[in-house]
Image 1 (tube, rainbow, N blue to C red):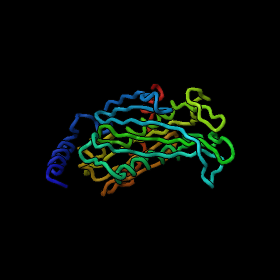
Image 2: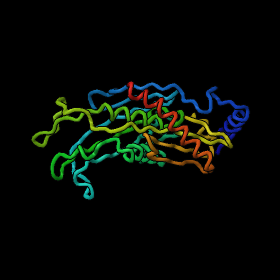
Image 3: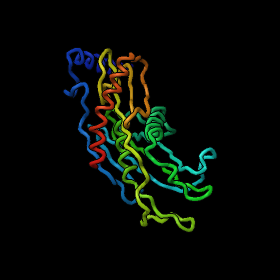
Length: 259
């Protein structure tokens, strides 16, 4: 940890001891969220642009036709990727996927996959041909909590993705069969632990100061969890985090469905 991060952590922890956060939010409060669906209309089958405070994420959904996995010959294929653009943060660099980009893609993929949000069985076309769903996540501005911003954007984009017609071994965009078959709205809630305080929707400075992080993705049940950081969480802290995730995801779900 360099001296700048050390000083920020010291400032943040002193505020937390006074029951305050750097942006004056409550410990269990999200930053303002804005959702724009169908942000990219010509080059994506579905898309969404989300701002979570100063964090900005764009997700595009593209559909293709390909071979299914051998162990699921009649199910569609889901593939999730994330790109951390240098314009989003001075810490991001061009080149192969970074560890944090891989983690972001995996957390996003797991929450959607394990919830069964996409009915992959309905994406079967014919023997050895299924629809393939590609989720491309682009981080445009990083000010903390990429997991929740990316999940909101991806889920919104998927809910508004149109399934094109497929005839004579060609995808006919502009002629639609209907929307992508979805079953639920999984959403994640991310919390950071700094000393003995647990904060919802951490800012980037709070992430630099955190000891541990927990992301919980829910529908009517827990679909996925991801722990980050080098510190630990007590069983009581995990249980409270799960309860908070269920509570806050209700408000997030309303925002997504309204969008």
